[in-house]
Amino acid sequence: MPDELRSPIKHHLVLHRLDPEQGIRRFYSLTIERDLFGTIRLVRNWGRIGTNGQELAVLMHGKVDEGWRV
Image (tube, rainbow, N blue to C red):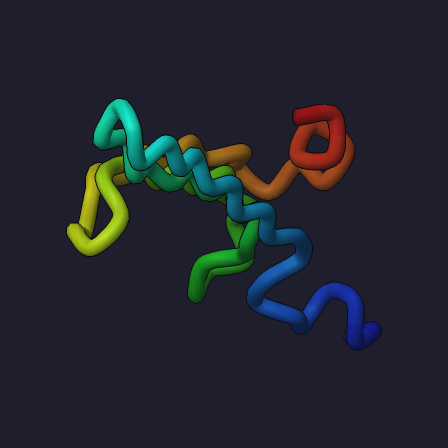
């Protein structure tokens, strides 16, 4: 199996929004990864900095082309 198919994490993006005057301290995170069964997942995390926030994962059912279109 090629190395690019073994890697558990393909892409990771983290954004922060800070505005001390308005008390805004937020984070947004997107990760495209493979789970233990090889299924591609888009994982979204968001919330207030310093907390665990919330998470939502969308399964791509192993379709590589579909995963990269996201």
